Length: 621
Image (cartoon, rainbow, N blue to C red; front, side, top):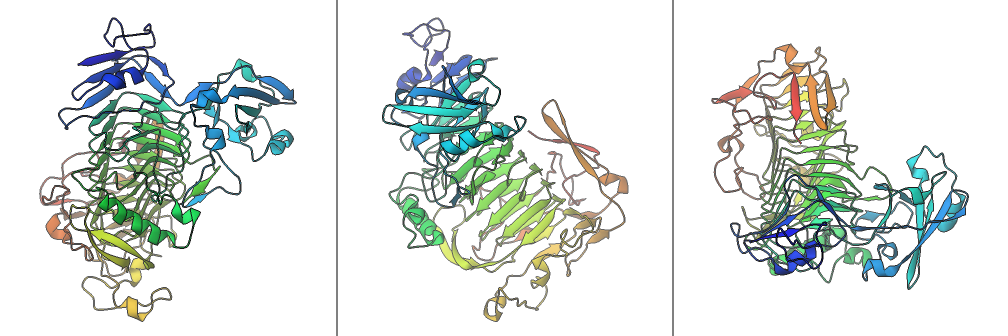
C-alpha cells in the first residue's frame, strides 16, 4: 500500500493522496512490509524512528520522495526573538521542551580516540542561514572575541543550560540574527531506528540535515544522521546528508555496556578493548545472516564533523557505490583517530566503488579486518592527510582502477592487499605493526580464523601508473617495500623497528609491470617496470555544474605498456588468512573493467586505470 505525507495536508490526515499525513512519524506507525511512504516537499522537523522493517529484500518498507519534490528531514528547530546584549553579541532563550528530553547543548562530544583539541565541544550546533557557526570555549571568550567579520570563525556561539531553558549566546558582528534563519539542532538523528533488527528499509530521494550526532568510535554505539542500527538489508539511495555534527550515515555497532570503556577506565589498552568488542558482538548475532548487506548508493554527503559514512561490523557484506562525499572534518574544531570521508572497521566482503571523495581530512580508512573488501573505480582528490589508509588488515583486499590524486595517496599499515591498475599521484607510505595482535576471519564469514601481528608485505602490486614530483617520496623510492624480500628472493630484512626474529617472518611481495613518470621510482626488484623520468605528467580537476572532471596530458606520451589481465590465478591467496583473492560471492575475480567501466578486452591490457587513451575523465559522482 502507498501512504502519502505532505506539509500541505491538514491534520489529522489519513495517509491517502487526497488526505495525506502531515508527519512522517504518522506513516511509520501504519507501515508494514511491502508498503511505500511517499513524502512531499517541505521541511519535516522530526526524528523518523522506524518501528517495523521489511520481511525480505523483495518485501521492503520504502520511504521515498514524491516525484520532482525535495522533502527535508531536519534535526533542527528555528530560534527567534534574539535580544542584543553587547557589541555584536546577541542572546536567545529557548525552552528545553523543544529537545524532547535530549538537550545536545548539555551533551559533550566524547568517546574513544576522540581529541577535543583542548576545548569541550557539544553535539549541539547553531546555524545561521543553514551554515554552522563555531562553538566558543567559554562565554567570557565569546564576549572578548573580536576577529575580522570576513572570517567565518568569528561567528561563534556559546550555550548556557539550566533545568528549564537554554540560553544561546552568539557573536554576529554587525549582523542582526533576527533578519536571518537561525536554527539549533534539537534531535540526535534524522532517520534512525531506536531498536535493533529493523531490516529491509529503503530510504530514497530524501535530504537529511542538522543532526546532533555523537562521536562514533568502533568501541561504542555509532550514531549518524541516518543509520541502520544493527540490522540487515537497507538501501540508502539518492539522498543528501549534510551538516551532521559527527557522522552522516552509520552502518555501525550496536549498544553495549562496555561502550567507550577505554576512555572511561583505560586499564586495558584500546586494541584489547576493541578485540573484546568483536568477540562480544559475534556472540550477540554478528553474522552475514543477521547483519549488514546494505546498499549505499548515489548519495551526496558533506559538511559532517567526523565521517561521511561510519561503520563497525554493521557494514560488512555491503556495497557503497556512486556516492559524492566531500568537506568532512574540514572545520578543524575537533579531531581523532576515526575521521575520514568513509571510515569502516570489519568491512568484510564490502565493495566500495565508483565514489568521488574529495576535500576531506582523509578519504577512505579501512581499519581492522577489511577481509575480502574491494576498493574499485573511485576518485580521490584534495584530501588533507591521505586518500586511502588500510590499517592492520591481513587481507585479502583488492584496490583497483582508482585515481589517487591528493598529495598523499596511500598509507598501508597492513598486509595481503592487491594494488592493481591504479593511478598514484602522491606519496606512498608503508609500515609494519608488530605491537598489535589483530584479527582475521574465515573466508566470507564473521567467524574469527586467528589473531596475528602485521609483519608487513604479502602485497601484490601490478599494472599501476605512478606520477612523481622528482622527490624520493613518490613511487617506491622511499618506500619500505624496498627492504622486503621479494617473492622470488631468499633475502631478508632487518631494521630498527623489526629485529632479526621478526625480520625472518617479513612476508614477500610481488611487484611487477608498473609504469613510473616524472621521477617516481620503481621497486628495486621489480620485473617489467618502465621508468619515464623526462615526461612531466600534468593533470587538472575542474568543476562544471557540480560535476568534476580530470584533464591530463598523460596519454600524449603514447604509452603502450601492455600487461597481463589480473585474475584470481595471478593473485593467489593472502598469507595469514589463507583466503583467495576472489569476488565476495566466492567466484573467481578478473579485473576486466577500467575506471570508466569500459572493458579490458583479451588477456592483455594497458597499465593504469584506463583501458584506452583519454584526455578528459568524468570523476563520477
